[in-house]
Image 1 (cartoon, rainbow, N blue to C red):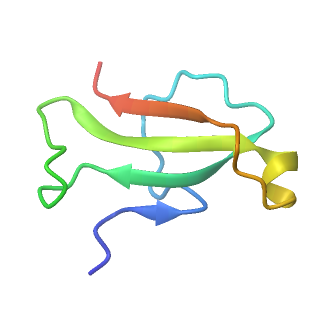
Image 2 (tube, helix red, strand yellow):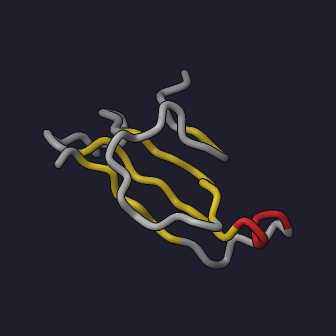
Length: 71
């Protein structure tokens, strides 16, 4: 069952992303999910962003973790 998690992109986009993600693409996004036990009142999910040039080479050694929550 697809539970809202997505490899290589965010869909739908998290509404309150204020992090500087220029030059990066989303590697994985993980939405709130009761199976994972990551549900809270203000938590939407988490995503991992990697430099675009590295992802094009298949290198995932560096990245940025972004937590998405309601403000």
